[in-house]
Length: 117
Image (cartoon, rainbow, N blue to C red; front, side, top):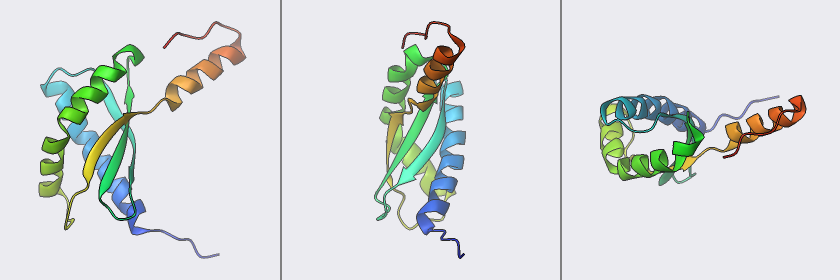
């Protein structure tokens, strides 16, 4: 069975790695709420990349995503210098709620009350 590996998959992985480093540095240098990139999905035409972000403190997630979206143009410029792409996609940051949902499910299974988010 032949495996299909698309160019967008490779770009997703490279963007996730590079954005992860840039976000880590931005959190440290600009005193942003602690966050990390969990996944990146680029559109087929490579125009837009959505970066899914996980906040270490769920209450600060909105502030972290807002700050990262404000820095998206700067991140795009830095990615253009680091990556070999003809055109770097526009960046959008979104909060990844899957970790919070997983914690709620785990709390329900253990019988303890779920943490409010």
